[in-house]
Image (cartoon, rainbow, N blue to C red; front, side, top):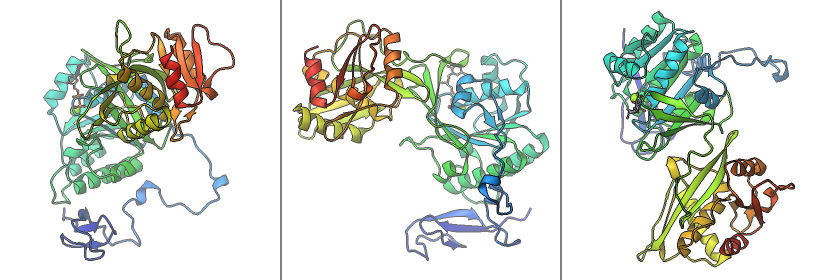
Length: 454
Ligand code: TYD
Ligand code: MG
């Protein structure tokens, strides 16, 4: 096959050049040219993503029939929950996560469950067929009908997709693939983008559902260009602490469902098992309450989770450190300023560390109040009372704002045996909740005063 012409495209201005240059001749940006395949000029205005939405006559929106997409459940209930009910035919899912977190394991289990009903193909670029076989034995998948291809060249994978005609295909991983059309090495921006775009085209034109496994860089972003996240329909992230057995799968983007759902798994000797009632797994098991610990109720998707937040405040040097694991560090700095200005609690000469137990990441601002109470508790060296929970967003003016669906959060806390709650005033329920004493607060200083006297 004749090699298609390559073309270098500027990331900044989109200008193209037939050769690589250090400086873009169009906009003058440095080191911004990426290799790509030149589109054949035949056909008028042929767009490289043309097949993503096939050309149709112009129509009135209200007259277009809204067909519900067909979903195939993967057999992994927790995975289906994040996907919005199952895999969509022709859908492309990108799943990212740290090495060793369980991406290959989960997908092999899902493939096996699907293989009883559908034709499935597992393309492995990282492991040999024998290694995959070893894993499948370990998972107890003897006699599985999953078809396996150990291959990293895109064109051969495309040929295999054509001859095998699977309904569902996993590419493990997109960073190992390379296309003949490009000179750059596998894993480079150009290769990753080109391979993903080609596979997406195949998925849209043939209806095969494709799952791409992606690596995560040290900074925590999916390696490869951001454009990868734009090309695919769904982006899932695997998170969790590799030292603990619990794993979360979170949707970052989903064209076919909600993005706030999480799936919870536990890594066992025989692969990943879904955890259908995860509300208490992120609590550490102290005998007696300890200073610097506060439990919050976070609401991810439809299920409330109780998560323990820990803070350690310690005398720091001339430039004290603020470190956070699982929580936003900029937000921590902001909360410390609010704590000082509005509640008079100063930490400017102290190192402050905060951590969400179990490797869970909390993005919602409802964690603010619990973070501040944990910090205050550590600073004073006094634990919060036994069975204590708190949640609520804290604003720059020192106000405590309500969290969405407060009643559900409180009910879950009561169910798990918590007995004291500090919550935003607007979240205080009208009817009392059995076993739970609720203290509504409007301002951060009020909350700090209140726990001093509890
Ligand atoms: P893996 O799926 O290979 O991770 P990734 O593809 O994300 O890099 O995860 C493998 C890890 O999980 C490895 O450290 C071993 C562990 N593991 C189990 O604990 N139980 C099992 O049944 C399997 C298959 C793996
Ligand atoms: Mg793997």
